[in-house]
Image (cartoon, rainbow, N blue to C red; front, side, top):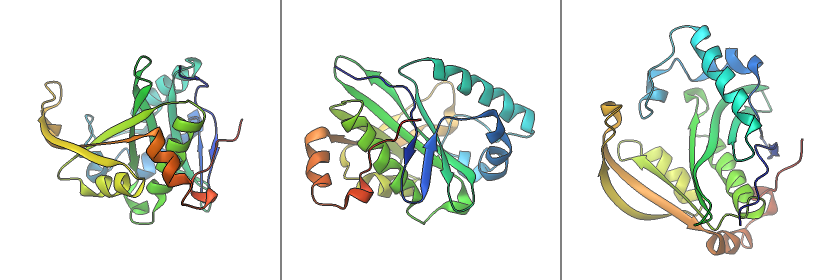
Length: 202
């Protein structure tokens, strides 16, 4: 049975993962929601004004009332700015599984930051949520996301075409990955605890 806690704060060496706040809108607008290169593989267009960012942010903040809502904004401690996000969805109570998805502002690519964030969320998923399997996917033209998945110990299970009738711009071939709890625990035993942190409470 899944142990729902809602979105609780997670600390890593360089990052804080926490609930969104309305004050995050300027960082979001500066660091990712206006960048077409960052939003290319998502089903929404770049924001053109900060009011649009504030509107969607208000919805996300309101959703934290749900015990099964897991949506973290990623804050880089060294600059005290929100630089991206990571979330769990597609939660399946019967299968005790969920999907993980993530995005990072372009200025912060290639520093291992998303791998650090994803490792911490996987640790939360297996050690706190008590999930048995986490899965995800990436477009074949976005191999950087695949490298994050691989560094986190996820294994490739298939590649197939996916059609999004509501947003054809993201149609295409997708690589699917997953990791089970037993595999995660095996990896955790081989690595420093600093890479597999458990979440701190608010």
